[in-house]
Image (tube, rainbow, N blue to C red; front, side, top):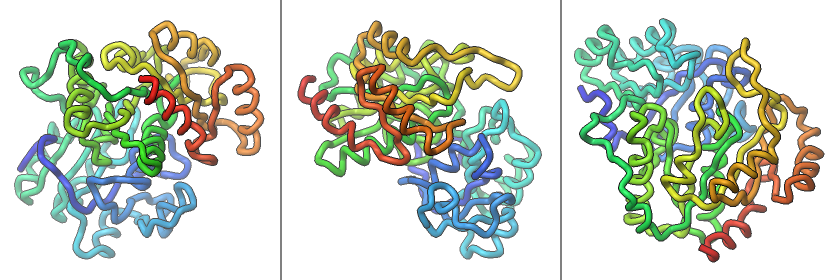
Length: 362
């Protein structure tokens, strides 16, 4: 049994464990894998709240022939052969391995499925699940399990050798869709003659099949800058892209986990596309914590102090009625003097000329 074997090219068919993917706040990994994965062919989603639907239609109205099942048992009865992998697509509070998830994973293992999890609490630390995996000769892949210290890289300055311009996709907070916007940007560039690559920094990027990146929030802090530099250098050396997009995490001023300066300083990204949710007045820190988000204009000024230029702002419509986002977008464009995009409704094509200009200018 391989445990946490991220160096191996795990690929195959998969089912995703979800929990009310329509109304829940903890299924962004599920959403991403439904939209796209080059590593796994998604055959189904386990979500008792939405049984009988097509997961793509539930997500964004696009039929993808991904059925939603009430349980692992129900899925096993309907799918033959069973998928190669069972992916945990839920992020419970604190990244805990709940009893419900454990039960579903045990059934998956006993039916011959390997387990893929991005939870902070590692599946490979659960003795019963590990023993079952050994007995059924399947793998446990804990994507958030850090590499051994001796395999981690310090920042070396080699970033100076990178020729591809870098664009950081940052956010004003966590859980705003930075990875989704990054994927939209890459797809748009590649469809229009710009060779674009992504450096992922979260577990979902790896699950989607990302070639270059690391899991930022499970990396010992001393090595974050070095692992980021290493991923960018390898991407530039191997792929020779026209532009590299770097997925951001959290936000520059989120008090529970500020993040983003590494992309601007260690990876030397000189341009930024900023993800923002104008309907959020406080950082998403939990029900009992109110910590006001600073004005958006200040975020652009902070990015400028770091030496970055904000090419555009992409909006997340949390807490806003669909017909209200258009007026907000127009007002923000007037206030900020940059392009503001409603990503899910209009795509990212309006940013393409700005990206081309940035690439040419270096």
